[in-house]
Image (cartoon, rainbow, N blue to C red; front, side, top):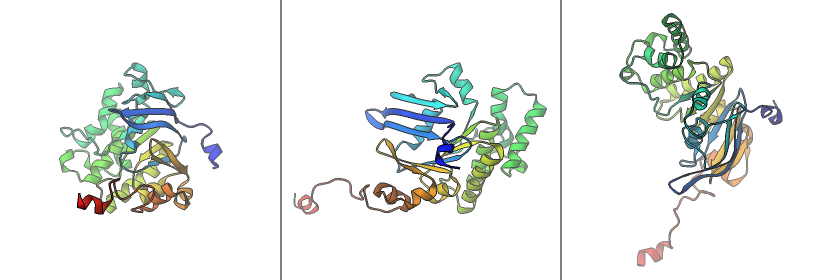
Length: 270
């Protein structure tokens, strides 16, 4: 699919978005689009605003200027019934999984269904077991979160994120803290579930190899804006210094190794 067709009907957009934390500017004119039905990776160095973008998209944070759009409507800037309805179309996989520690695996996945629907228990049971089967953990339904490994916790959280069949799932650093096998499982699940369920996936990550292995499109953020975007192949082949440094993990470049300081020898003598 060409880039033009990919963005013909984006599920989400940021237009001229400005946002700050305590006088520290995070975004100063962010513009990007999330293609519908695809896996989009949002990358960039620590502190560049990757997770903040998810907060804006989900309505947890409000822009200072500009607009975030989701599925044709502007994301409400404050808590409201409209925001609540919009969030029903979104799933979220948190970096730390955020499982409820006093509930079993089954009840963690069932929680959104019990809170947001009036489905009878018999249907809730079917839906929960279906989603747990998709992530390979139907047999772990009676375990407590404390009994799960990091990778298993992440998979339970993924089952919970998709249990309401959302249009879009947001992943906040889904590969952090996982061993290679667990990471491979999560990487594969993101791609397979996106395609099998007709989802749109937004993956915030600084893991270049894993993100590029499943993404259809990549955005690279820094200095409050998008500094590069394209297919994984285009981004990895880029000769633009900022993109080349990040995608190849180079220690020095436009993002310097040394924090600005006075001359070293002069500093020693003073």
